Image: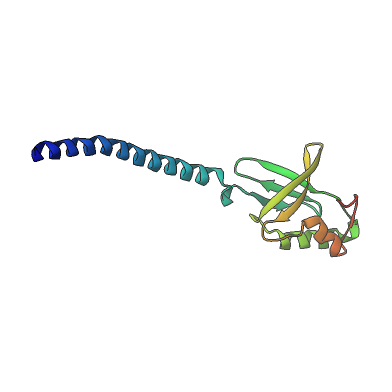
Length: 142
């Protein structure tokens, strides 16, 4: 009788074990799937836009992984007298390959008009030119 009870107890455990294993496998797979989503859905630093060239006091050449854009700084007008100083300020603020954040404001003749902010700064480049006395604000504040 004891042998039968032992066999009966063993058969109940073996029926429970496959369910336990499949539940664990489902949890592991779900955790792996969540990890993959977090890794691939988060923005990667290498995908940020980069300054390729300062072309003038208000025009930048910006590139991302596979495209290049001409970007005009939004809401600023630089007096021709201050052109060289403004270009020097921009080259110092955003040297080649500096990563930037673009906030588009419009488009004119294939040139993107945007507020451009270096990723390590809170101040956009147009505002830097205005506060430096090299440009005037040419549109209303937000």
